[in-house]
Image (cartoon, rainbow, N blue to C red; front, top):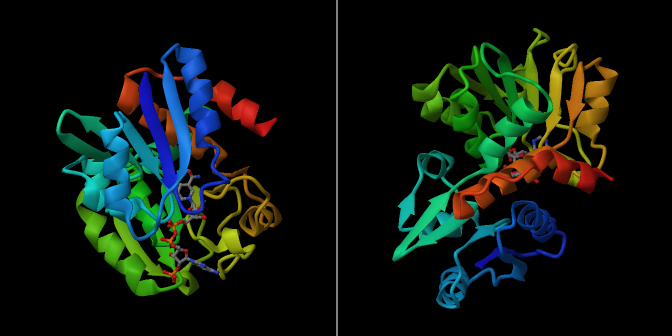
Length: 267
Ligand code: NDP
């Protein structure tokens, strides 16, 4: 039996226990996966107590991704470059930190939306934690260019510099987005959470694939994409399920069928 959980604060909204229960049923792996409200100021002690109860690992969500990063005794390359951890695996005395968010996005694009990143021009809106997590997995698929545009231009410029060793990147302010066509636009800002659209010039969504990391509702970004004649419009539910599948595989070695789970969640 794998004893697992997701820690968050708040956590009530989390779909992860449902997703992992479906993975467990499909694969026949015995899993006990709970959602746990963790105290914001006492992550390390709380996580240690959970490990002492025989945990095999856990996920973390907002606001604990940096706490988990600092808590891990070893980090995968994904976690290191992301500067954040969403998955912890206990292996003997090792506490291994991984970040499956970016893998989740790339797997959703390639496996469910049939979108290859190779040789594509990608525009990422936002330069926060989510962008930092998706950059390496995207760049490892050899896109032609990855542009990062952020409200605070300096953060986008910094991320572009930090990731330049993994591929062609550039960073600038949202106001510098041109009308030139791009292949894929990823909204990795948290504007959708507030029901807002990042303030950008229209035009570049024409015939583009537009992907909002947010899930669960139609967002202003998705409306903007539609109004600007986007070729494909998607939300982040597939990413959520794929990042969970990647964590499940990291813990158990079993590969779940994500298509069925996405279908179940949508219905
Ligand atoms: P952060 O708080 O780290 O970063 C927020 C980013 O959004 C910053 O770049 C910020 O710009 C920008 N931003 C916020 N409000 C606006 C606005 N009104 N207009 C333009 N830009 C804005 O958040 P995260 O990176 O952690 O999360 C971003 C999103 O990704 C969230 O919606 C989250 O739910 C989603 N997500 C989805 C996942 C999935 O599995 N589907 C996984 C992980 C994240 P500035 O720097 O100028 O403040």
